[in-house]
Length: 70
Image 1 (cartoon, rainbow, N blue to C red):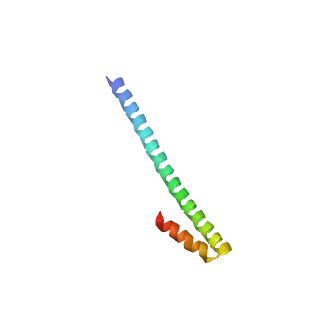
Image 2: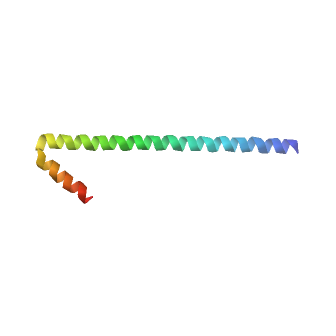
Image 3: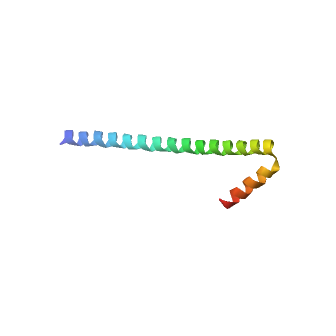
């Protein structure tokens, strides 16, 4: 029975390590997604700034109206 108990402990510890690895991987993926979200916001902000610089303030008014409709 001791060999069965040892086998169960090894299996549980292996399962626990695998579960911990999955949890760590998921948290890293969520951090990466939040970083990607920030980059998209920065890109959108810079694009709007470029449009305003090129086309003037009328574009900014149209963009603000479109943003409020969303």
